[in-house]
Amino acid sequence: MHAKADGKPAVAVIRIPHISNFTDFDPLMAVTGLSVHFIETPQDLSGFRAVILPGSKNTRYDLEWLKTTGWQTRLAAFKDSGGHICASAAVTK
Image (cartoon, rainbow, N blue to C red; front, side, top):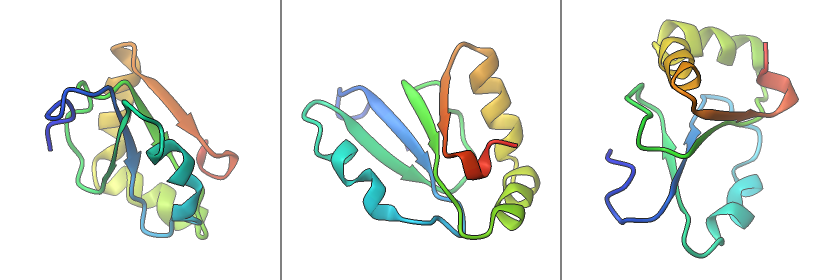
């Protein structure tokens, strides 16, 4: 997925396996001029203005999933290049 395909600033929401509540992002998706992308497959995040790690119903599993799928590496590279990451308290370890 190319984040800037529609020309709007883009925010990525990592679609973890046990996301606690998709409706938490409804207000964000309603922001005019902002493009919100739910992504599951690890990918280059440089096209996004920010990345959100949502809350989890199974934090330990989802943290391990972030590591084993390659997301941990992608998120670290995004942060190291100046990217902004926002996380719910449940997934910040």
